[in-house]
Length: 616
Image (cartoon, rainbow, N blue to C red; front, side, top):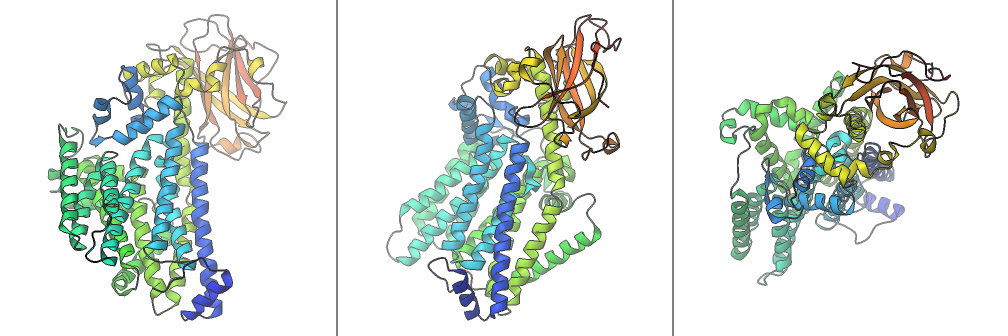
């Protein structure tokens, strides 16, 4: 493939494209489309970053509690026994080290884990961009289009769970390590070809082995790298010592991994799952296609997707005749194989959960998107080399259409992420106020007794949500924390409440809706005072089907709120406020009442405690 050694100016690039048989107008079109695709990748990264920022929560979620559980039980977060301990089918050695860093240096606020997610994906983007430049020799329009596609696939919001659960770095890191392992092996092979009879530098082989080991001890799927590495070494006819090094390293690593391994009882038996080939195929198909299909997807969109799939399949046989650099093709094929293997192995262990589980687990889309990315890169490279010069333009236009459709349907992953974040904010409010509502807390962790023990540890050591400013503001006078909002800044209604958590943390849960009219968005939060002292907190974000009809100017249906307040003493004056958004939130009075009975079944609206009235 003819390449240049440096980035070409726009005019020079058009000249190179013309030399390949494209006229000036077509060359400019190719160049413009490539810039559009690159911009699409950058905007997708910005969307993922925005998703992380707006959905940030310092409260651990689900498996993210395992680190807190260990330290709450007196176990060192860097104890070798703890690092090696099996979790489900995984040995999270590297993830637990990252979680330990977040615990020790960042007060267990998930900041380090969220940052790790971003860094891992950026490093993967940079590595694949370098591979296109070095291994494939791509330049100009082709490199820009490929880089944009990689950025889109690595940061596509369809994998929203990976961007709002900090511990999901354990799923993204093995993909980066797999690419690094394959690249190390290919560089070792390229060195052996360039210098026949001379032993290639062992550093490349060492990088390949270490990356594979790290992948295995980040997530169980990393163990699947070893067979592919050995097969690739045999196919490339590497020296016997290199093949043996891979075999010995892979056998040793896998044997250690399986030592005292226990099959999770709630997972399907992989051998028995193989007897259900149809169910496995359905699961794998859902695994790869669920990021593109939504409940209200239009018929014409499905037709376009099918047509695009047929077009790509039709182009694949041409790849064998395309003059793409062989190392890059091998990298793409190895990555496609590892993605397919991961999907199949996942299916054998989780097919008992039903194919809906593959659709709901958006974290799996990281693997599916990488699979489609590799196919797309092969398609781009092949179409660029085809005699029919319009083929590359067609490929670019198809990618842009995919980008546009992904942008048009991005409301689905953003809505799913917001729903999860609302549940986290509710759990945060319940835990800080000490109103331990089981239904609310079950959405962040499934074992109530264990959760409360871990929360006591976090509170005693001012970690996670108890390191946030709002935690220290509980118990202070409202006037010393939040200024009063101007009249008309908020609208809202307190609908009612009920007693919850009688056996653990007794209190009331209040419900209503609140709208920040000043900023034209749902209120930023809810605070509840008892005799003027902040005692309760709440979150806004519940979906109300008739929200837009409640008050003129409301443009969102996610304005419902729930708030938690400990059981007020008899005669206490309880007031509910909404918080405006902005750098300095202000408090808008919504409603209030005087508590008639200290241990009554619910709140008793007997009299208005102040001259303030409820907002419309």
